[in-house]
Image (cartoon, rainbow, N blue to C red; front, side):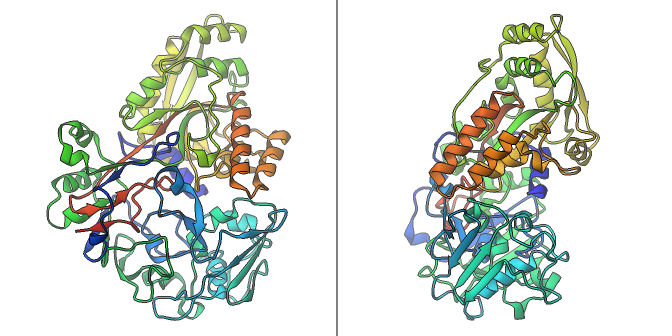
Length: 566
């Protein structure tokens, strides 16, 4: 969580590149036409990416449930619904398990049963002990980088150091070869979401080579790794012991998948636009279309048909630190909320095609518990007169001067957005001095350390899974205020808010949990701890011979497990 969100907070996106979010129930647009079963067998799919896949060890990967490369190799207890598009794709479904988990009455014990007939790439059966071992090795200091939830949630997890010296984690029980029982430190209704993480992939103990395992991890999914150049280039081919009869989530149409990274984003777009040779059967791995491609879409129907629009749970916002004056005054925070020109901010990041205005902190997607509200309705361009009234009430009838901290690189938190905020607040009599950090690392350190956190800065938040829990708790739970790596910018430690978070975490019924998170977001919104600005939108391109491509609402990237090629 900490690692991924640190990147999300700073990176933003360049024009139409970067993080994205959901838009109020709008289905993701697909590309390449309707699904064609005749093209769901054979060929090679190429994935063109800017960032490398990184270490390809399930213990070290920071990914869960989506359409990325790891889901082609590592099956997990649960996964997201690969068979659906739009908001429905953000639901948890069984993968290796027969269901999404059986909770105890207080959601502190979760039981899973494995499906029959599961096998590794070498034909050996997958057993409960393999999943237990896979989870245990993710605690080893030698294999860092995965999400920290298991260390926090599993009984004994806080001090466990992994299995390499023979120690087991008693809070994971395997009473037989097909059953796992997890004992948690506290109620966690979101455990089925966590069970989509690659740390829940089975690892055969006798094939574990420690830090070298990532060179050839043993597949439980439709593809096996045949070559891996440190995550920069990965070649996958079919796992002969996988079949659709034991996996109803992945179609696995191509015979071969080649992942190539280290490419300039502009080059990725140029190659996909040209769509020649192998690039005709290629998709973007992590690069959205840029402004030059966006400008061509309306005049080029063929190119437009090769663009899919998708969403991901993310919000870019203005953060306040009430420990710094004048942001301790609610009227000042409210005045800024009224004064902000969201349309100017959206224009600064590329326009309405790539961002939607936000007035709620939760993304406007049902899975998060989205509850519409706008307590400071300034309209698309802000209401400077209302802002001036509030400033007068706060004791600043002649306006005030404040400083806005921003990143120097990521445009979501960068100079263009900062300038748009500066210009809008000037109309309300607020003089904004801009403070750009020397690097993204410096900005991350400054804004995520309570001792150095500025009073007013640009931020962004993306959820590890589509639920209100991983979205609201790190930002508003006072028990998550950390000396380093802190995301609670308001440094809010309200017992009632903490209790509401605990109550929502106990809920195992998705509808009840969504309602609880939505109600909490609406409650917090009244306090103006943040000013939501926009939800980004993904637009991604495919080669002309790619079929059945759509962007997952869980991950904001193409679901590689469903794509086919001519």
